[in-house]
Length: 180
Image (tube, rainbow, N blue to C red):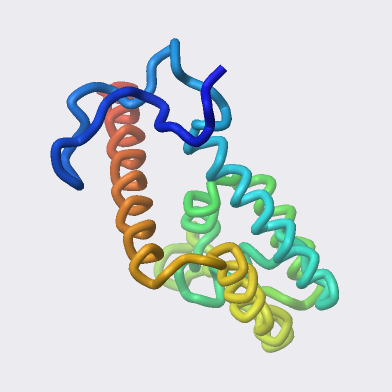
């Protein structure tokens, strides 16, 4: 049994930020309580659950507020972009957008340049419905960061961005192998 207060491997870096000399995990030392993936998933699950509880009063669920928030920020203005960003099946996302459109919260407009492209937007009612989301996300995020200094938060962000870059590189390599 692995002690959750110790590092998962007996490797240490000679200096901060240097790559480990050996892999961090091995079959013999992997344990759920030392798995960053498990811990990150649990944090995200609780974060979404807490946001959902607060947004329930506004009639929004995570399946609704997440795509609406992405659309409102201009980060994803097509079904394909939204599907990629949220890593959701386009069919499932279409059904969600159908429900949001029926509620008068979002709209779809076919592109005049390319008839295959459908642009997504929020209606004024959708903009009003999504207005509480940033505040709720800040409230929940700040609660999750209780006890962290600004410097610790900045360090955490550096580490998470590095992990994201590694994850994206791994995804891209797998895609290249699959297609090449």
